[in-house]
Length: 331
Image 1 (cartoon, rainbow, N blue to C red):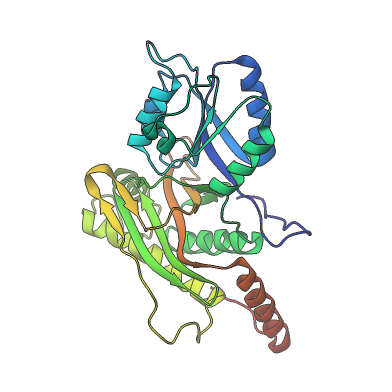
Image 2: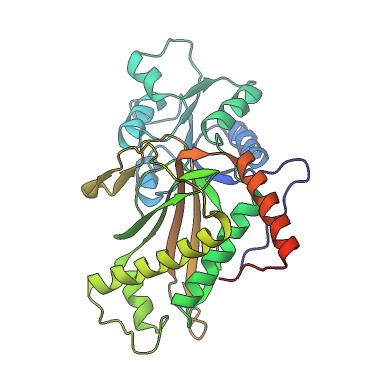
């Protein structure tokens, strides 16, 4: 179980971490950028030019790329790799450490979110803050989501041990696994969607291991596995609704945007470039901890409305009401 998130007394929001590819070959810059990443909340994955595109295949939950212009790439330089990364994952902001004075071409400029030189770490920090951490999430909300999700998963999978990894933000739009659910989330302070994603084979294996109720084995067809994840989603949504959505939230129609799903590339877009809140849950067998865990990935996409200030107002009013009436939230 993750440690509770302690709100910063100076702010009502918390800056979560984000994974980035670090494509750098200079030892001094590697050390400085590793320290920089630690300071600003980035989790760097250090790779070479030869491993870069393979790393994109392996990691579906990235938030950006730090790339050196003079990174050795065979007969080419880092700009060729930057274009290749941008073609493959255009949603990932690329931060280019420039080592030449030649102006970028139009295509290169479109692929690069921010170009910087040695000695300009403060400018890089400001750009990272704007591009990767453009949304901040109240610590109380993030911890509440983890708590109610773990409780819902323990209800659906009573024989599994459920752990939540540290939450983080992503810019990737790549779906994890083959089974996904999407459910709308609307309140006075947010509008968007929640997703659960997992691998079908891992979910089936979890049933074989007896994670769920007695009599539910691993011989389920894909429709029944879909229903398992769907019911889990409903439980989480119900708990979220009870805790965070007042009955009078919305009485009229709201604007919507198209959701684009490309199944061939396992890609989904909600029409917004904003970062998404991501939490990975690991379900393990207490009697056989050495087995590969079932991983369920949860994402919150607040693409239609996001106001942490309004959440703080709602949370304060809700807490005051609970104290006044003596009522408790039960899930």
